[in-house]
Length: 632
Image (cartoon, rainbow, N blue to C red; front, side):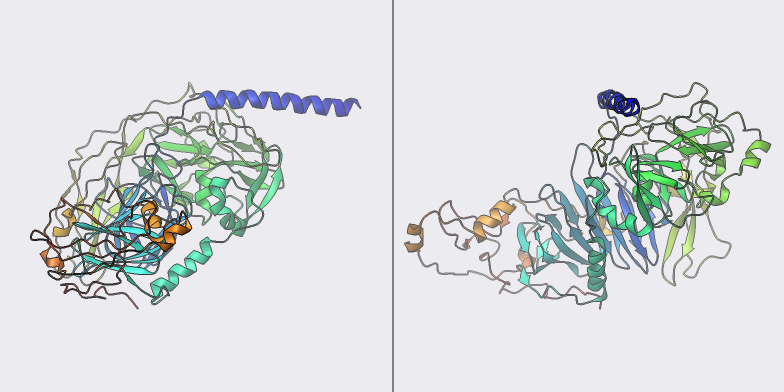
């Protein structure tokens, strides 16, 4: 009886302490400059692709789980890739495609914006919190997504742009007009001028890119009946279930245990670090399941289980504690309680403080010039090496943000084929320099507003530890002139006599997300075509699905409209003025059944008439139907 009473009292005390911890955590301000959707993920890759960061001149080869942020440019050569953004939204690129990421959601904006320069892209939208919050811009037109659906974009630099809406609703905006393109309709545009009106097409897979997109949609649409993750992470349920198992561990609830990992495996060990201006040093995991496990949650260890992951719903660049001196960098994963984890002789410590033991199985140490190594596992120092260099009683980990950023990039020219070369950046040849963040980012503990899914609905949150008093001061490397990035020219120039010149590079502020785009041809300066404020989902529904208030409205007689033309429609005759915007379809007055709107021609009219609801334009056009080439 006493034993049972003691257990009940212990549980009550634990719940009371837990409530105080939660209140203290929620009272702390959240100073992060990003949210869960500010960084997209390269979730699938086959073949070769490259990523050019906003602050870099050269490209780096893309890998799965690469973080994609505002200002990045992605180019595919002979492969295809998939970018996961938002909640279960996907952008898929075909080979020979180039796209810029202009905007991703932040704490102050929900806007997602891409610019497709050339090639073929599929946009699958499964979650759309607000209409027109996803935009796709091409050199010929701008597209605003109004409903969830599947959209394909084909851009030919010499012929124009074509949009095919397999399912959903989108606005296509040009120089003067805006069209609504609904499911199973297609539309062609060139230099802001429409070849005609939206026409129907058979929404079936016609080429290999269509079929590949369908297979990816089936793969990403898998759902499991038993869910262990918070609702914000439900799209990762199938991925984690394929590579690990769920085990119940009190007081955290169900935790995830990876399968088939090596004996010396540890978190933040198999992968590399990359610098992103918005988030700082961000971990790129090489495990296929690593995106959710290293950017959300915490890692613990237990006898008989090994390493296990505790899910949370707040994204972070890497949940680790740092230490550094003149020659070395060290880090270890953070525990549930905000302290670096320690494993010594199969004993796990989740609230360890003080000098960090070098023989802990959770510690990773590299030399200073190896922080950006392509594979940390290969350059990590062994415990006996750490003892030989006298680091045994020096390491004191802290949750302080690492106050360094890359100093510059050395660019080399790589030949791709007989006609193409690429500027590749050599991250190994860069130094580090100090920087002062514009605002402090809390990276040391679980967010105070995180809700973890467990059986009892409540889980303890971590306590943010303070900075260690023994933390070494920032190391200041010798000053260098960064006005020009050095280019390594091969001894033998490639065919075509490509001679690279010195490339000047602008130094962006550490948290500047606005990129400086490089103009490659005359179409790089094409402005975005604005959306019409009168076009919305409500406008579309009122026109195509009018509300019948009474039976009397069915007995009314309507006048007969006679269509007359004064001249034929010709895109070449449209001027660049944006004084008026034509909207399709026309919104009828409230309480009446909609009829096609006719804009009659006048002496000052630029086109004869415009009738909504027609399947194609009957006038002459300088752009022939079906001129956009699609790969077979």
